[in-house]
Length: 474
Image (cartoon, rainbow, N blue to C red; front, side, top):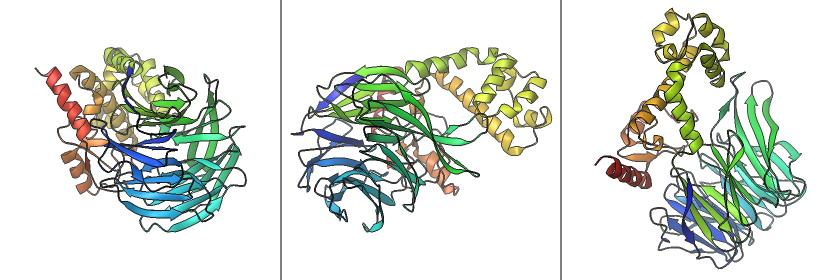
């Protein structure tokens, strides 16, 4: 299900951070350098390593397009690099001169956050490279940062254990003690989750710390309460400080790093899938690639390991297989359970009254929803049809044998010319261009506003599709 496919051993000291774009991997180290690798064959780029910082480099991150890389250092600077040629675009000095421990781009690439050892946090304009707003936490160093997927807020974590939430104007919305011995990392899941009872959307936030714990939080936005942060659960299984955590791009897995080991957790059950033990010292960083099933882990042993996951986990495969095998045989009660899981619990009574079982469910149309089931709301009918179509698509996908990652989310057909949009998802080029040309500036996958309409060729995915075709269409 997961295997080690490559080890990078070019750094001369501890690896502090790993970051992916759609085509590159960036790593940074106590050795003062940042290194760039191609995802096609993991060779180092000609203009790598990137050298400017005079002290240890603590963090690096790509802009959403992947054209710009940010790095920050003990030398008190945050540097922006052109990933195409390695040239320095800007050097932004922390106002207090304090060592900068973490940096993160906003989802729309308009802002960059840098957090420092003295607790100062700066919001930079990523286009003009000028300071926009500045704030600070009352205690500890800032060592972690993550933007919400919609960009409305970001979260910082400090060495004293506080989790602090800021809006995009640098106003402090909330602060609380999350980890007794200090936070080490935090990350948002990019995929929203819908509350089945009330239909509200919320995001998962993971935080980890020196207290050997990973905590899962729920971040939601409501008209009545506005922003709300709630503790959900604590993941067990660690017996040493947890120095890194990251969600996979589809939100299905959470990975964490501790002494010599990496844990991957399946989020639906919060149970441990794998324990990877290739590193010989503490795992300091972990990152999932946005469009390929790759995981990078960096360590104090000076190496970066690249892991490859199957395109489907057994849990996902079993779930889809069950749907194919049993959907038509669902009872009316099974359909009721499915409706609740889709946030459509208000329709349970109507479906039961009309004796809708699995076979009837798959055959529902907009006419039957309106005329037979008397569902008056057009929006509600559209949502029901969309959920049923998702169910039909899963059946069709498994029957065809084509991995779901190779299908365009818009057309549900095998991609010939995949491109990556600014939401991080891959689409068939023509389909996405048509989507945008109809003045749809929202993501087909998340419904969030697209930061940019630029489409980047996904050569790695195109190669994977070609290899699959060669194997399965002989």
